[in-house]
Image (cartoon, rainbow over all chains, first blue to last red; front, side, top):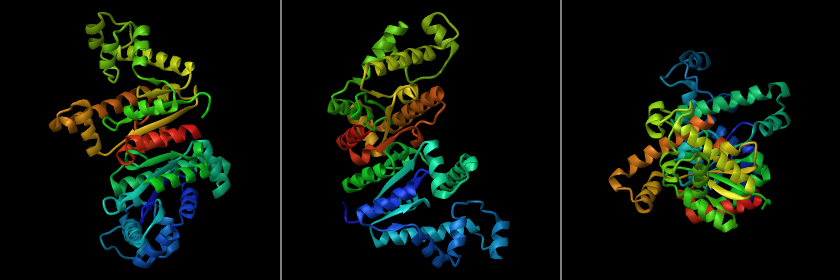
Length: 197
Length: 197
């Protein structure tokens, strides 16, 4: 493994990408950055971490929403402010050393600046549905709708900020069907890949 | 490795997907089906193998072109006739046993019928350009244009017959950046994956 190994994981909702990221970081003995990104972005922006977590995948860019929430408008929408704060946090974490980052366009933000291993995780509907229900407590009758909505949100967010297509193989060094390889199988594969990279 | 291992490889032009497929088949000791698909499709359709090879990635569906080439029109365009003949050939090869197939929407044609390992190979522009020049004798000044044209043709062909997006991670169990892992590195990775699958 290289001295500095930065792995970015983009993932479909319910595919287990986040869990794979946590387990991969543990297996490689490097930090898993998730809450830390939110906390650092909160520090940088002055927003509450919980508020950032609830808004970070959105891209409304609405002047009204920004005004109603913050009470002022600086020419930058609320979601752009959150994205900018997260950009700074992600870049700062990458400077610090090896880590696994999940979501938040990290592959795009670090492109050309750090030699990252960029990964996308997806799975079949049945696998994602089952995990949405058992892991996130989504009601079975609503699972398909929730999955579709969150994936659409992620795709829009990624496209808005990166001008790239979310989930296009082209943007990643490797993509994996976690429904086929399983969570632990995917961790094993990515661990060997990270050691090769 | 399963008793029957069918691997389909879709690939960007110049990414080395075809070479990876050949080497992978050799490494796994299973047939590599490329010319054999064309020959069988030729037998089934009555077209010349060379004619099929020159037309198989196209989807003009033009009545005039079909008439001008075959002298008659059966209600099915020439390219649809070629695609249908290749479908039959691909299905017949899959019945016969383990193999590696490259291109021709094989992942889509075999979907739900055979438990295939579906792969997509892509690479950065520099890698594809260099291979287009050295492997296919494309003139350096024309390489970028040729790559773009052939990839657009492949994307259109795949989308036309499968109603799916070519190169979307979602359609494949694994996608690989051969520019990063190299031809032999990609073969190694896919060999271990095929044994796991």
